[in-house]
Amino acid sequence: MCKVDVAIERYGLAAPTGRYDSVDDYLLARWTGADGGESEGYKSLTTWFNKRLLARVYERNGRDVTDVRLDAEYEALVGDDELDYGDVAADLATDDIDADEVTGAMASWSTMRRHLNGCLDGEKPTVEASSDWERNSVDIARETVAEKAESALASLGKKGRLAGAEDAGVDVQVKVSCAECPTRVPLEDALDRGFVCQEHHAGADEMAEEAVRETGVAPDGGADSGGRLRAVLPIGALSSAGLALSEYTGTALELVAAAGMA
Image (cartoon, rainbow, N blue to C red; front, side, top):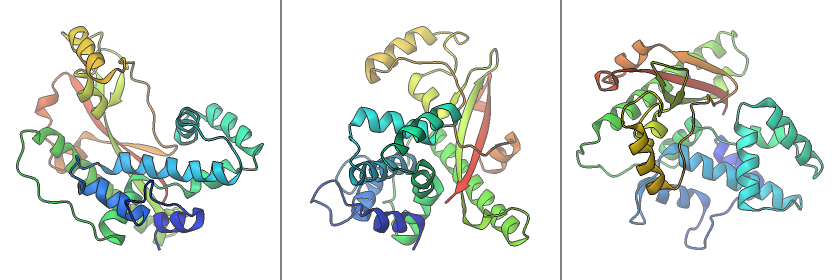
């Protein structure tokens, strides 16, 4: 069994509604868009799964479960702020919850990808060609880099150069940075907002207002975030993966690969 299967069995995870026979059925339906909705990506499904696991742990230990609390504590547990992590870990300990054990049971983006494609033999329906080729190019580049990094980790593990490497998963995130200041944000956030840096890009104010109207979320700066073990891959890795860079004039584009136990 893979890590997702182990977590489902160990924590007794069930689908959120009786409409689905299992968590796996629910994940596949959301991933493929089988219910008639828009298909979801690995990242959102991983977040949902991990929060489901965390909520189950809270229930077992008599800890109050509210959406606000779950969201805030989950972000602290998976983020890179050690102080926030320590504060939440100490609070969880008062309810006999081991934060390291819980986070160790959580799935990574690459683990969820392998589970859906491999363990469940899932397959998304063929999508007709769309005009959103830029996002598709980024997704292809990200998956290609993740696969190459996983292969390299497995080799390092077999050679005894990196303990636990063979069982590690790799998460890859694309970030864009402003050419004028240190602002650095995930590409998805930049595309949703319509700009990389509000201060240094013409028309950013108007686009920011539009983004707020559509999403209800105000844009913020580019604080870096991600896994605790990170490596910034060179631009060449993107080029070799088939990502066209000419559309991102004025910004720097990089892939951040976060490796963690999967």
